[in-house]
Image (cartoon, rainbow, N blue to C red):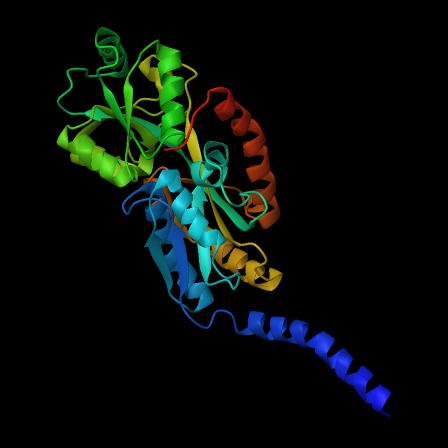
Length: 327
């Protein structure tokens, strides 16, 4: 009798965690969710997070709070997300820079590829080549000529060494035979402010950081490094049209949860993300920023995991070969 009672209790104890997990997932979310943005407020990732948070609230029934955690090319914000409880209440939104490139720039105490649970690829957007208004150059070729006449005198704002803008800037130097200095900021937002103020000369960063300023006339866009023009800036030529054919640069975005977040919760978050990306209002807002939503079949956790791994295989060897170190 005692042995049967013990076995019954043991079986019940074994089933208890699974029961709790199911209950936990069924009641999720029961309180606000935090999305950690690893850049300063006002940048491309911050804007995207706020647009998604507003729509995902409808699907999940809870507010999604955006928290900007800056520094070290985004690694500080990502680290906070990795170390958060795997309960679905802390999410990590980021980019090629924060969820791939920093893996080759820093000695991270975790693995970007295994210590985060992918939720979905969100989309991509081209970068934008912008300069301060007081520069004499009126188009891309004139700007390249000015850079050649003033080697190492121009300053480009970037959100940290090894960031997408940094690598795009290095590629631009190689493609044009020019040289300029890089100044690191805690995010694209502060860098754009300095570009507007005329304290730096150029930026080659995600277009959503500077579309509003270009439209307002406070900075000047010379070219979109893509095959098509930016929908929000139809008068700005592509690099092909501006005299630098074949020079393209873009960035992609994704969203993750901490490792070991229950699969049912990941599924709920993915479903809410997919619903948000399908919303016409969300797509219109993203379109104005130049961000393109990826096709539905690429909006899965598995697709993000595969893409992240492929990007790491592509970029990590190049960063290490160039001996670029995080600041």
